[in-house]
Amino acid sequence: MSQFWSSTVSQLTPYVPGEQPKLPGLVKLNTNENPYGPSPQVIAALREAAADSLRLYPDPTASELKQTLADYHGVSSAEVFVGNGSDEVLALAFMALLKHDAPLLFPDISYSFYPVYCKLYGIDYRTVPLDDTMRIRPEDYTGPCGAIIFPNPNAPTGVNLPLDGVEALLQAHPDAVVVVDEAYVDFGGESAIRLVRQYRNLLVVQTLSKSRSLAGLRVGFAIGHADLIEALERVKNSFNSYPLDRLALAGAVASFRDEAYFQQTRTAVIDSRTQLTRQLAALGFEVLPSVANFVFARHPQHDAAQLAAGLRARSVIVRHFNSPRISQYLRISIGNPTECAALLEALRSLV
Ligand code: PMP
Image (cartoon, rainbow, N blue to C red):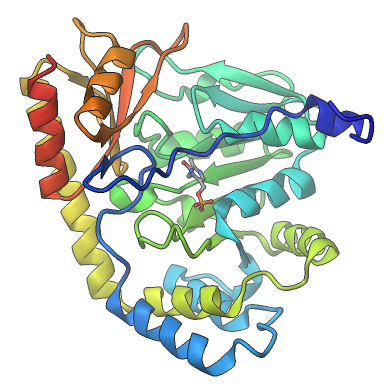
């Protein structure tokens, strides 16, 4: 620890992103990326933006992208915020919207970035256990509550909380912001965006990293009441008034203009998930019902860490989770059919 560090920095336990190894022939199913590339129209838009305009600053208001998102989701652009990946949008939401007079509530288990942000911003938090079927139970979110955040579908379980459950949380805590992190919603969940006009305390956060295969471009967005969006804009403009670079703006807009490609690739992922779930069950795995681009599964006779190590030795990388509450699970991203086949072949030699 350096004598020059602030007390906040000394106490941080930073998030460790998933591995990005570059070994040839590796089947990489550890960070929930999309196995299909982005739309060819996105690549064309990136080429054009790179050739024409990198000399110039980007649009500080991101107006074309905001309008594109507003039209796509049936809201106004004053109800849209954009940022560098949903991680940045979430970080700004933690800074701008969470009250400090009562704890932030989020599920145990969920996205491991949330406690990291809490430490960064000095936010008190309380985790609420999932029920025995690994579901979020809205009735358990009682007591003092400064705000609520959860992924829907949850990560790393992939399990969905139906919209009536989201509404129950919004109604139970009308004075607290409820942030619904919909990073994986396009793979079979139901978005809470259609509730934003009804609930002023709802902020929905989405990303282009998963269903639009643009993890490398870093684009995320939030949709909510204009008051919440204004708070995010204030914080953002106090840091860096350019929300996104020119390539990100151009690529993101193009992605929303190619609906056919989006539907085709997201359906392919959903079909592979259905098939993989069946095949894993046939190998003796218990697989949680996932509406995400990954499955959360465990084998009653095999240790998850050993399975993950065995897979790695066979050039397949997955994540494993083992905590007192969530024991012996593998989280496996849905690959393309060839990758899923390689995973299954490796597993057959291990279980
Ligand atoms: N929320 C959840 C639940 C996630 O799993 C992730 C991906 N790690 C993110 C947000 C952040 O995604 P990105 O910053 O790429 O938009």
